[in-house]
Image (cartoon, rainbow, N blue to C red):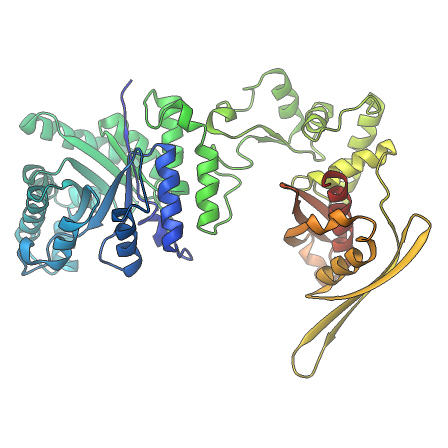
Length: 528
């Protein structure tokens, strides 16, 4: 089985995504996780371009980051115009750094060299050759990133090829063909890569090529896969496709496709089981909401909602799944909705541990009808498993009644100085006793939550373990303006678990209250 080398640039290219600001600790954690996953090369950053990247390589040198599998790579530029390599401070920093591998990026487009670097094509070529030769002479393994290669090849084929020859003869181990602007189409990637590899082999025998694709045309993953088919042996990319503009090729998707469908080896089947967890870990560390619809790793990547699909899946596991989700650390997820049937409900009941002798065929039909009625009103149980579980228990007459509401009132006051205050008063019954509690909060939902907790904590002290994690509001019919029906989804955690609940009403506070009550009730059932 042919092995493809994986090169991750999340800590450099990925960190250039708008809104991302990684701390030193963030970078160290991501590098350690990528190493555990089995990536071959981790590009730590642009050495010398900013204090944080410099600190990262210093942390590696001091032993704060220990890599068991991956090789750390420092990224940098060729020597500056007018400098010899031995007198260029930036190149000296690369030569002295602890990273065993250095990637030098240089223009493979004569037009770019002339217009953006303000130098001749010959001078650009000489600087690339001299810089690589100097670093190799200082004991570094060097990769050459041929920036704008595919665009440059189409503009001036001879010059783009001369750049590769110069880098190879200077001692670069890998010549990485970069689709820097991300606009090259798959058939162009195939044709150009095959031409380049054939020409290089005719002159030098075996030459190692890599691909560095961006996703501006939506072809980053496809271009990476086709480059491998055309003969490259290294794939570069970022976790989840993070990067500047549209982003880079998603290295995780590329790895999964190569391993499961291409007949290639990258991280291996055992480590591929970490694919989903690696994706979500890096998303969390970068403070980016994971894409629920991302291939292989998304929460909805193997989700089934339509009744026909769910019914087929219960009989044939791959009826509507292109791979077994367990191979990438994900799982099949059944969504309950108005499109679902009895097969979907049976699978969902098993997932929620709701199967019981009382859940007869007729009860299942009744629950499905109730779900369909409520979804017609605006409810959605896709992200509200806890509300679904409580609905089933309610249908069975088994839902615990921890408390009952008599009434609540919320007052929001805006003061002349611009300050706001929200106060909630709740009247509830616990058993035969009646309680009234008032609390101030940061908005009506927070005030209601505090008042409810104040009233029932003495009876259910485990409520202290429950924490609201997320609160989402969606207007279901914008044409109705402020009179529209509103859906509120609350995510709550406690005892190492998390669950979602939903409320729907024309009154946003009422919808919030319903979702909040479900969240508390489910938590009291599950958290001791």
